[in-house]
Length: 294
Image 1 (cartoon, rainbow, N blue to C red):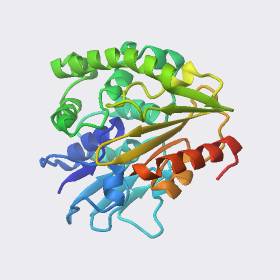
Image 2: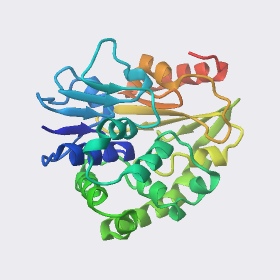
Image 3: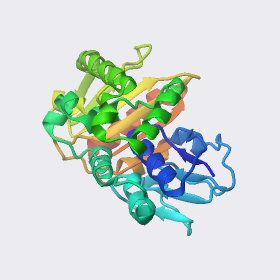
C-alpha cells in the first residue's frame, strides 16, 4: 500500500494523515497532476491517491478539485472542499493517533487562499504559511525534504517543526526568494483590464515565490495569469482569482480543463507543449476579460 500525492502543502498533509491512520511505511510517491492525466504514473493495486486526478487502478481516492469530479462511483471520497487533507481527516478521524485538527484547519485556509494581507506580505511571521511556501513541488531533488516534512508533522509539535534545521534553511530561502520574486513580478506583469498577466517566458530559470503576492502588488486585478517555460519543451500557465479583490466569476478549473489542465473554481494550472503557448495564453486571457461564468 502506497500513498500517491502531489508535492504541495495539501499533498504533504494528506500523506501525514493517511500514513498515520493506516500505518503505512512505504515512501510517498510524489507526482504532478499532469503525470496522472497523461498516465505516466505506475499506479498499483492497493495504492491510495490523494489530491490528484483519479486512476482506476487505485484502491482508494480522495480529491477536491472541481475539474476532477468523477462520473461514476469511486472507492474513497470526492467532495468540493477547501482541501483534500480536510476530506481525509474527517474520513479517518477515529483512526488517527495524533490530534491534527489545527494542521488541517490551517491547510484548509492555505489551500483555499483564505489568508490575511499580513500573512501574504509577511509569511515569515506565520509558521503554517511560511512552511507551506517551502514546498514548491517543482524540483524532484526536493523529494527528501517532502518526506522529511511528512515525518516531522507526524511526530512533532509545530514549534519543533519550524525549529528543524532543514525547515529553517528552507524558510530562509523562501524569504530571500520572495524579495527577488517581487521584483520579477513588478517587471514582468502587465494589466489588461482586470486581468494581470505575469510572463516569465524570457526568464531561465523562471523565478518562484509567494503565489499570493501579485494580488497585493496589483490590487486592480481580479485574476492573475502566469506563464512560464519549463523543461522538456513544455510551458505552463497558472490562473488564480485575487484573494483581495474578489470580482472574477470564471470557474478556473472548468476553464483550464479545455487547455490540458484543471483545478478549483478559484485557481488552477495547465501544462502543454511550448508551441501552444501563445494561442493558449491569448484564449485564456480573452475568457477572463469577458468575466462570464463558465
